[in-house]
Length: 366
Ligand code: SF4
Image 1 (cartoon, protein in one colour):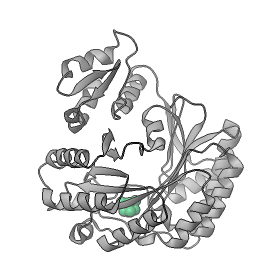
Image 2 (tube, helix red, strand yellow):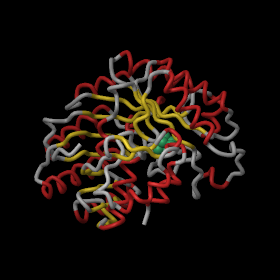
Image 3 (cartoon, rainbow, N blue to C red):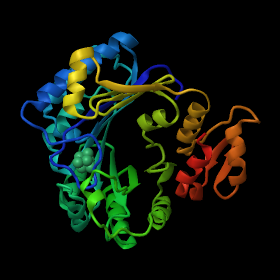
Image 4 (cartoon, helix red, strand yellow):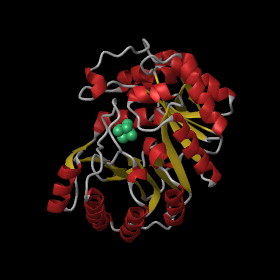
């Protein structure tokens, strides 16, 4: 993970319509938006390329929003611009997020043709039950998700799906059904997230009947996927052996990251930069200065060490202390055994530690 070079995250800020729980920077695509977005990206890439001197790129991740909303012609332009600004000759992994309703054979073919490295698709499924999908305000149905998954797998592309748990009215049996469907389809990677109800979203104003907590769902997730041969390599991520996603591991294990597009974050050395979250705000900044950056900070000292430790502890590779008297290691000591273990000089969370990870982060933060 310590190789020189960067990883790139590109945020695609378009969605068919907003899901009821969504707080991500995304909106339906208006007339002319794709063109303006691609033009802005091209400028932002050029600006970073000049500063970082056309760096070598290890991994690329297109997230959203819904990357599958961009047209094949849009993708050809975007990848051409990326290749102009960055050295893509050593790309080890390129991931496209997609939503089932907007993924078609033409787009998959285009992604295969324009990808400078091994391609992955990450599909936002969330549930294989139509009533849950309707409740979340998702556009797609369960059969759309099955169709899209089969299309990706038929094309020989490794597939990950995202699922959610602790949904309104969801039982363990409901969640188990979605998990079994995903595994049965043949995914080699699965990410699962507990629903968080954020202020400012439609769910934030509703009286939702949520299961009391996500603990039982998460414990079942670990148990079920473990029995099916998946390895938990991060708090929310499970993969068949050898199918860990390199891009995310580089982030958790401290690699440099360049974020492009509205709402994207960059982590370069000790500096953090955040882009303006709205398309209009980001475009105005890019027009004025070449970049959509609207905030930034330098992370130093105890905060930087705590952040690095937390990110590393999110993974099954764990975190190595800086010597015997590392104050963060001292804070972990009372948790040894049940929640934390020491493996080859690195602190790692136990399966139970993963289940209460948020409490452990609180102990580590300065
Ligand atoms: S598809 Fe994802 S990004 Fe788009 S509205 Fe739904 S949750 Fe938000």
